[in-house]
Length: 193
Image (tube, rainbow, N blue to C red; front, side):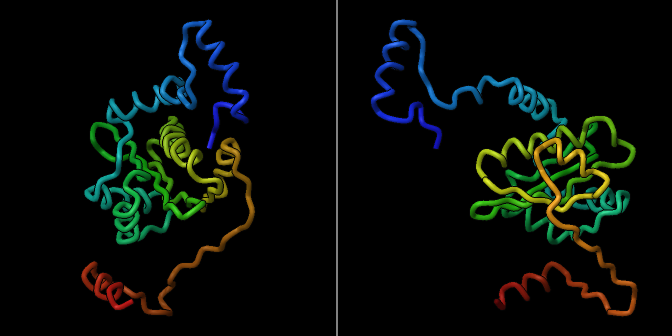
């Protein structure tokens, strides 16, 4: 993926320089030492950012209601089950105050449910969450996309994203009966496919 040299012939001078300097020559070792990753490790160790738990879904639903996001708890649980390593929460004294998660595909990933409680916005929590997830995703997936709040467009542009389309938002206004399934019913429907 990221070779130490472009050809085998270029390796010998590197080995010679390594031996003369008495140092190591390694590939991709900077990740271990880069300040960005030390900062993320500190956040994880301090419990300020961690993996989402199924017990967080109820609190995440409340945050979604407060921020105006449409969120389906069953869908969130499916994402957490299939991609737990891409589901992060920000916590204050053990209480969830923000979250971000992603779904992986073969060569791409979609970032979903990026939200921070209104009382905790503009404190760097969202940036910490997004930086953590983005750092994991950008190395493995050449294409990343997300559904974003238009008010956050400049935030996402700072990470290299660009707007490619606008998606409408549709709500049930009572003219069509909502489909409400329990987890057991949804699993039963899933098993029929």
